[in-house]
Amino acid sequence: MLLDVCLAKIHRATVTGADLDYVGSITIDGLLIDAVGLLPGQAVLVNSLANGISWKTYIVRGEEGKGEIILNGPPAHHFKKGDMVIILAYALVSEEEAKKMPHPSIVFVDGKNQITEVKKGWRPA
Image 1 (cartoon, rainbow, N blue to C red):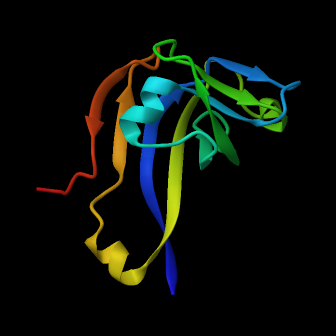
Image 2: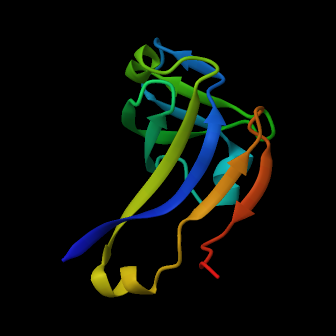
């Protein structure tokens, strides 16, 4: 049996753009994806704090340090500049692997999507 577990998240990032005429995906600042251990092309779930919409898409690496969080293609109908989102990455792992895994890596950001704290695979005290 495989379990779908959360590997990483970018917590309460601010959407900086929504481009309906792009071919789909989410552009994320390269520093953010590196800090949390994500990869371009990796699938993520984007959750809107503004309207509760969740959208599954894939990562496009954005320019480092610009704080970009841009929803491209169809999700531009549901996410707009200024919305806060939580970006989650999941993986299928065996039950044995899941039991050994620490909590997900988490990147916390400020209102301009600059990193304020990183918790790498942390374990509760």
